Length: 309
Image (cartoon, rainbow, N blue to C red):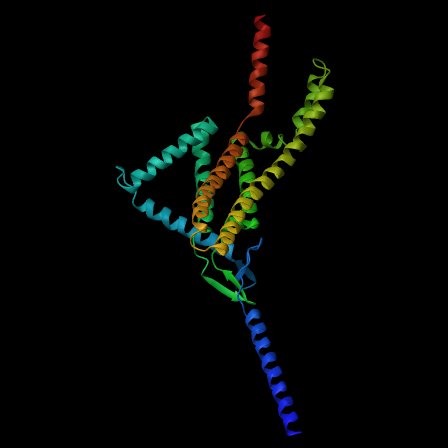
């Protein structure tokens, strides 16, 4: 009887030890810290009721750096450029000459360049910040690591705001350049409907063409919305895909495998910032074109030719 009791106690102790080891393993698994690449930006702290995400925090840092850098350069500007001022003047002159090839007008370039260049720098630095190995700084919530630094352009909210700024800014630029009436007529072509009453005697086909021209305005409005979608999703998709690629390569073989992909992402980040800035400049240029003025000029030429003939 004593021997059977000792055997039962040994079996019970071994089972308890097995259960305790299993519970330790499960707690270790549960306590394992993970990091996920999410489509949305993760919140890191609150200012009152306002939630600050890591992408927004990074964008604030980029803006502060640009402001400090601009003020520092401005305080050191001299009539005779030397050193870094000479370098930046060469860069700005080259950028303006590149913009001239798109606008075909230095006057338009001088008006649009102060808007396009900061947008380019903001996107460029945000793209490059996401490539830097700064992922070790962050906080842990529910066994999930949340980094403090995440590229602002890897958040759809940032790219959407930039796209809206680009498209609406282009229309405001058009209003200031060619006037509110001509800019409005691109979307609600009342001038085309009015031409039915003024040109029907000379050209009866205006009854057919005028409504079509009026409908084109709604297509232009849809095109503006399409610009916002294409600008925002193109930039967001490329930057976010790059961050996921680097994280995947780092998980396979850290320090060695991600290195060539980091160099690739630096190049891609510069290209994406350049494309966004150039498309913004194109929108500003198109908005500043006076199509009605060109039509009136052509009509005057036709009338003068008819008089000569």
